[in-house]
Image (cartoon, rainbow, N blue to C red; front, top):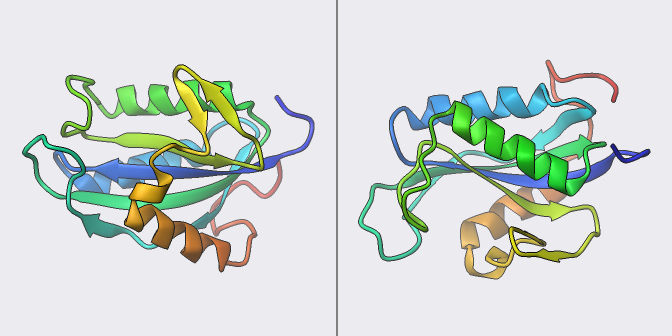
Length: 150
């Protein structure tokens, strides 16, 4: 774990099953991560799917967390949460119960095969830009019911 917490922005998305429940599950699971607390959440919005795969609309939300987890550890935890929500990785940009992406992690720049931060699609996702702007304008502090300290 990092010695001081850093702010990470995590995108939540769902377009299969009970989309609201999947996002709620993700928010609860994120708040339960060690050394992590949710400090802000954007509004949930419905968006059209990205890519060429025919599928239904998504519910999306951006969450800001303060975390002591290193980016690679955070990614592993996000993938664990996706599996717990029965995410199946069948095709790129295909339908999913839950999709969790690290969009930003402090000021870090990471370029690895399976982890790129800031997320390479950030400029092409208008809804992410709206959600980030909403979070950037929010007062950062613990949300009701979140862990008070890391």
